[in-house]
Structure formats: structure tokens, C-alpha cells
Figure 1 (cartoon, rainbow, N blue to C red):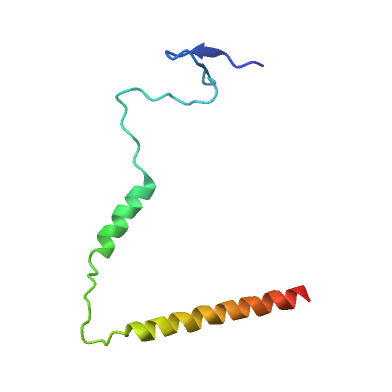
Figure 2: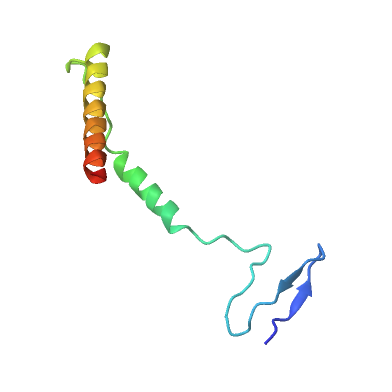
Length: 91
């Protein structure tokens, strides 16, 4: 069964909604429905806003050298494990 089409102001044809679908097209003055995701974000923001992060100046900070060494060791360890795993798979 062919869906009846109508011409819009721009001249393109768009299918008419099925009468069985129960869908109403939005009118120009309709309010947008509230988004559950945005409501959850607002709720979480309000709840987490009670926890304020305070920088602890008494804790010693790592030097740049220690940070670079930590990154080199952890990333190097990962790539060594990845290379050995690939080599074992290809045997």
C-alpha cells in the first residue's frame, strides 16, 4: 500500500503520518518535553556540588623526573607485554 505524500512549502514530498500511529506533529507553540538525561545531570551536579575538592598542600608532589619515569615504566611495560603477546600468538 502506498503512503500518501504531500508537498511542503519547499516543494519536497514528505509522507503523511499513519492514522494508526497515534503520533501528533509538534505545533509551533509546543513546549519541549524534559530530557531525562539532562534532569539526571542536573541532579548529579546538585548532589556532587556538596563535595568540594580542597587541594591538600601538605602532600608532597612528584617531581617532573619521577612523573616521566613512572610514565616510561608503565607504558614501556605495557608495550613489552603487548609485543610478547603478539609474538606468542603468531607462533
